[in-house]
Length: 218
Image (cartoon, rainbow, N blue to C red):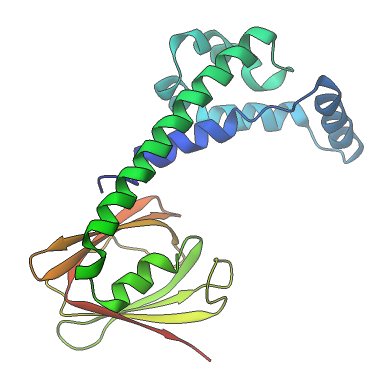
C-alpha cells in the first residue's frame, strides 16, 4: 500500500493517544468517576502507555521522550509545555494527513472513469469497520467475501463481494473476523488492483482483478 499503510495507521493512533482533556477540571472529574466505579486509573494509564510506547517514541520528537519514559505523558494533567508541543505536532500531523488524503483523492479521480462500476461502489460505499465473515473460492478465477457491515457506514447488513477475473491474490491467513480499515485502488493494465489494510490482525491484502460485484444479503 502506498497511502493507507500500517505505519500511517500507527501514527494515527499516536494522535489519538495525545487527545488530552481541555481543562484540569475535566481531568479530575474523569479520575473521580473511575474511582467511584472501582476502576484503577493508574493501571489503565500504565497499560495504555505500554501498548503505545514503541510508536510514541517512533513518531514523536525527542522533546516528548522524557514524558514517555517517566509516564507523565498520560498519568498527570499535561503541563503547558507538553500541551504546546502537542499542539504543534498535531498541526503538522493534520497537515500531512490532509495532504495525503488530497493526493489519494486526485489519484482516484484520475482513474475513476476507467474503473468498473462495482469498483467505484466498493470505493465510495466504504467498508471501513466492516468484518470479514468468510472468504471462499467460487469459479477458478473468483473470490467471494462474506462481510458483516452492521458496524460500518453503509449497507448495515451482510454483503457478498465477488471478485471476478482474479489474476493475483495475496491474502493473509486467518482473515476471519478481521476488520476492514482502509483500501486504495489502482489500475493494473486492463484490470484493477485493490489494496486493503485490516485490523485484528493488522495486515494487508492485495488483489488484481477484472471486476467486482456487491450483493446485499437478506
